[in-house]
Amino acid sequence: MLDNNQLLRFTTAGSVDDGKSTLIGRLLYDSKSIFEDQLKAIENTSKRKGHDGVDLALFTDGLRDEREQGITIDVAYRYFTTPKRKFIIADTPGHIQYTRNMVTGASTANVATILIDARYGVIEQTKRHAFIASLLQIPHVIVCVNKMDLVDFSEETFNNIVRQFEEISSKMLITDVRYIPMSALLGDNVVNRSKNMDWYQGAPMLHTLETMHISSDINKVDARFPVQTVLRPQSEAHRDYRGYAGRIASGVFRKGDEITVMPSGFTSKIKSIDVFEKSLDEAHAPMSVSITLEDDIDISRGDMLVRSNNKPDASQDIEVMLCWLNNSPARPRAKYTIKHTSNNQKAMIKEVIYKIDINTLGRINDDKELGMNDISKVKIRTTKPLMVDSYRENRVTGSIILVDDATNETVAAGMIV
Image 1 (cartoon, helix red, strand yellow):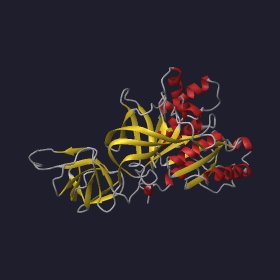
Image 2: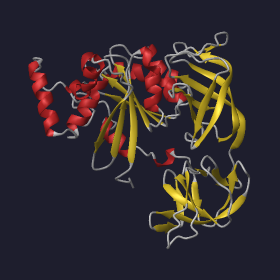
Image 3: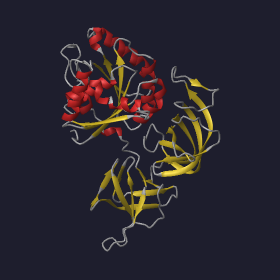
Image 4: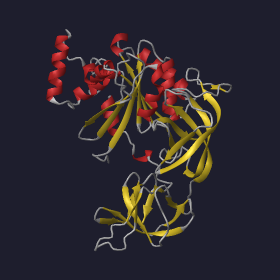
C-alpha cells in the first residue's frame, strides 16, 4: 500500500530545448497543480506573445527574468501534490557548463527523469546526465523520449532510442530504468494516456511517479544516528533527562538495542526513543528523534550512535569522487572544512588520483587541476576520523561537502568510494 503522504523527489535533466520546461508545465497544468492567479498571468503572457493556447514553458520561466537581472540561478525547485503523493521537482539547466547544478539537484533525488529529443536520439548530453545519475546512485531513472509528435509517433524511432540508451546504461550502475514515449507539448503520456501511441502499453509519466516503489531506497540495514545536539531540559518533569537528538541517517533503532558510540567506542543500551511528548518502541530513517541511553557517556555533536555488530569505518584518509562546484580552482594542500552528517572537521585534498572526461567518460590521469564542474577521484585527509560508509551503500553517511574557510563558500560535493 502507498503512503499517501510519501514524498518523492525527482530531478529533470536533458539537453537545451529538449522540452524540460514544457514537460514540467504540462505536469503541473494537467494535474491541476497551478493556482488560478498563476494560470491567469500565464494565459495573458501567452496571448501577448501571440500563442494560440497556454505556453506551458512559461511556468518555469520566471527564472529567465531573474537570469536577465544577473541573479545566479542554481536549481529551480517546484512543489506539487496529487492525492497519492507529494512531489519536489529539481529543474536543472541543460547546458554543458552546469554539470554542478545537476549534481546539486540530483543529490537527494529518488528519480532522475532524462529527456531525449525523439529526432536526435541519445547525444553527448544524454550520456553525461546518465553518468551523473549513475555516479549519484539515483535509484530510478525515467527516460522520457519527448517530441514524439515530430517523428509521427513512430514506434520504431522509440525502440531505437531505447536500444541506444540501454547500450550506455549497461556500463553504468543504473538498476531501474523505464522508458516513456511522450509529447509534452500535446500532453501525450505525461498525465494522460496517449491516443496517438496505442503501441505503448506502459503507464503515463505521472502514474509511474505516483506508483513507483521508493520505500526500499533508504538503507534499512546499517543503523546510523549522527548526533546533532544534546537535550538537557532540566525542567521539573525532566530533571535528569539527557537525550541525544538528530535525524536517523539509515537503519532501524529499537528500545533495548545495544549500541556503540563512535569514535569513542563506548557501548550502552537504548533506554528510550522520544518524539515530542511520546516514546516509541522503534524508529527508522529518516525520522528525527531523541535517544536516551542507560549509561552516562560523554557524547556531543558529530558523534554517531551505531549498532555494536555493524559499524562504519572510522578513518582520517578517505577516497572520494569529488565534483568541484566553485569558480576558483582547488588550491594545492589548502585547508577546507569538511562537513559529513553532523560532523565538521578540517581537511585537505592530498592527491588527485584521476579526473573523468565527462564527454567520453574515460579517465584523465595526467591533469591534476580541479576546476569548476570537474569530477575527479581524490584522496582527502581529515584532522579527526570520520565515521563513513561507501556512498553506494549509504547516500547519507557516504557523502561530504567541502567549505572554503576564507570565503565560507561550498566549493565541492563528494561521494565516498
